[in-house]
Amino acid sequence: MTTRREKIISKAIEVLKSNPDGVRYSDIGKKIHEEFPEFPNGTIHGTVWQLDVLVPDEIYKPARGLFRHVSFREEEISEEEEIHLPEIEKIKEEDFYSPFADWLVNELEECTEAIPLGGNRFRDKWGTPDVIGKRESRRSDIVVAPTEIVSTEIKTNTRELITAFGQACSYKLFSHKSYIVIPKNSSQDDISKLDSLCLIFGMGLVLFDANNANDPHFEIRVRPLKQEPDMFYLNRYMKLIEKELFW
Image (cartoon, rainbow, N blue to C red; front, side, top):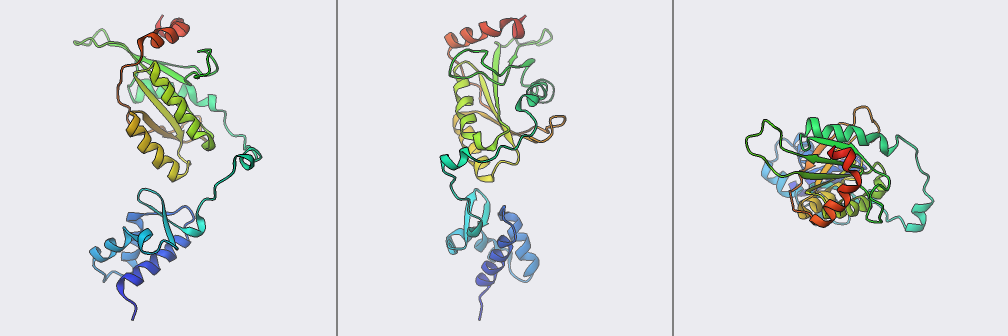
């Protein structure tokens, strides 16, 4: 006779085989409960949370709380193969700089002023933020706080997320806060890893719709922690954009 656990596992495998992108823990539980309403919730959830352990040849976890059938496991793309992948020309990355600068000021209220930058304005291999902003106390503020610099790296290409993270990390050299902004359609595994890395390094993580420059729908995933930059580099780089950001 088939046990409850075996029925739960069988149904979970069936569900995952029909969902190439994987299914969240809670959603699998709901589907199994609908199939077997007589099963106790404890039995269902007690089995679901360890599916990747119970049947590792059938199910794996590409990210926290996400289950996927092994037939959809992503194969590693060699560096040589990746070079020859066709580029799909969509909206230009630069089209999102101004919308994000506005969002930092008006929606998130992280800055009192922010400007698109990009290019090679800082004139060195460590890179230039795509958007940079400052936060200053207003005249109406009772307590006056020191000026803060906020830097952002935006990526529309989901194959460049590791590069984006490294660039955003380098901005901490001269910024009080640093953000990485990536497409919502990035793989769940990449988003989960960046989520954890941003928490570890105190950086901000924002998701957005890379197919809609008119309404990117920026969504804060991780808020950055304020840290003190190196004042030598802070003043060195701010001197290069003094007219745009401070006058």
